[in-house]
Amino acid sequence: MYRPLVMVVDDDPDLRETLCDVLEQAGYPTVCAEHGLAALQLLRETRELPSVILLDLMMPVMDGKELVGELRKDPRLAELPFVVFTAHTDRDRAAASLQAAAALTKPLELDELLSVVASVAGR
Image 1 (cartoon, helix red, strand yellow):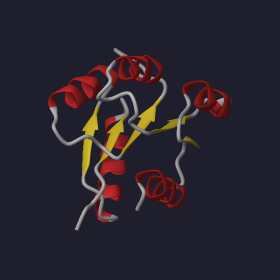
Image 2 (cartoon, rainbow, N blue to C red):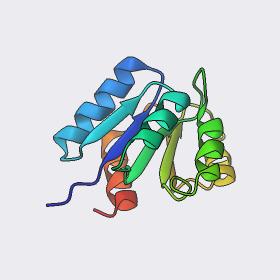
Image 3 (cartoon, rainbow, N blue to C red):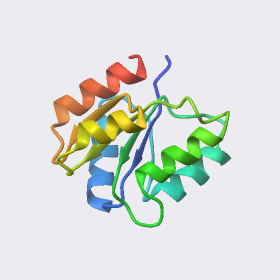
Image 4 (cartoon, one colour):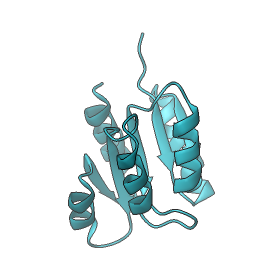
């Protein structure tokens, strides 16, 4: 049975671990990265690409917007769907400008998160 892979990219280790745990309990295999550069390196090295990327917008080293810009430069990664999540009040405008599949506001509602992941990942 196919289980869509979900990548979680967030600089908060507690939130990142919690999201991965929740997703795995819901049946999604996960891969996690602490910032955009780490995510980009993982994506470039892996054969199995995620069905969806959960992406924090504000992170050190490489933020979510910079990561999206790098993904779009790589034909293999350019079409990966991603969902942004942020505490920023302008989440919808930021998501629209990045052409995100969806946008969530921190603190995240787990039911909403799982619903969005299922919708975007095609499950």
